Length: 211
Image (tube, rainbow, N blue to C red):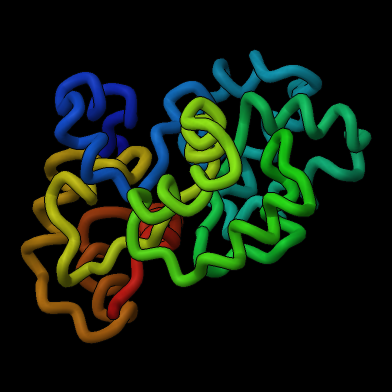
């Protein structure tokens, strides 16, 4: 599985602004992704002791941020979890995340959570920037974008779109494209499952949709 994956940092470094322009997953290189961060990186997050790091590694991939929050809640108070989420966050699906999940985004207010939901369905991060930019400045939009993604259509997303998925490298993206057209998510699981294990298929699938 690791042979098929590179960090998003490397992807952005090699792809530059062209990839950023096509991004469907926010540029979250400053925020660790709990599904792919290694144990050393996780150990550097405030309040995560050895036991919590081990639990994160054991339970991933997480279906959503609520699952990670449920894991940490028994051990960490609200203020501690907020500090953790400033450093460690699983991007949320802009089209399906509940208000509860949206409110886990650091610095999120009830009013802004309402605006996130108001403009659904999102078809691109460009739309997100335009709509949320009505309420906050560009710097704040960029900060919020670190924590979100718009699902990628398996049949129309470009190579550049797919490369914005955390941990998706060139070889895996070629496989995504190879098996088009997709008629079901089961087909995606079957075909991509030839190359990676079930956990990695599930991790990748959360960024996908079929329109």
